[in-house]
Length: 152
Image (cartoon, rainbow, N blue to C red; front, side, top):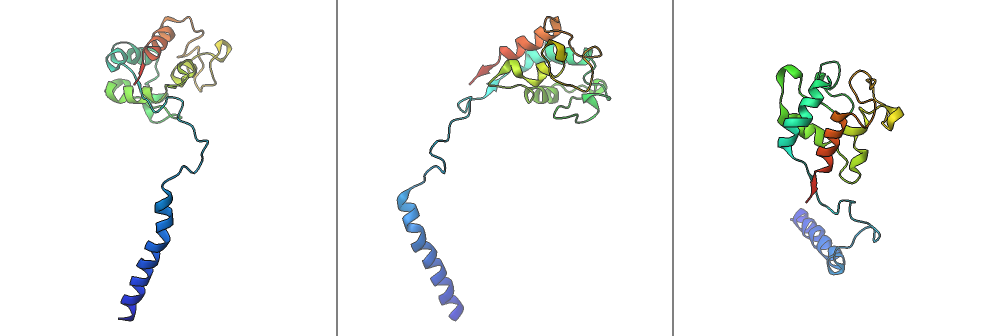
């Protein structure tokens, strides 16, 4: 009996204490909080174009071999191995390497680009699998695929 009264008091106290909070309404913890740069929209990329163009480029450059991104997670990028191609998986992984706000700064472009040409540091030298400069037709094809994406 004693325990029951205690529980009623605790529940009653919690209800009474929560009334001022409920009356005040929900407020943002930070009145200066801003929307995400994309405005809450998603960058939609063309999967068919990826399968037809970008995926084969990554394979031809050796990005999906076991010593690179096809042998498990390397950094934040993983691809299905060349001998067991799964373009659905590769598409999802490639999308994660695209910056929706600053597409030209996407890792999918800058990681394989030689640092002397504006790329960022990458384990594999550009001379082995990447792009020596941004004029490379494969670089341009990946860039075009990224830029063709649509914010929705």
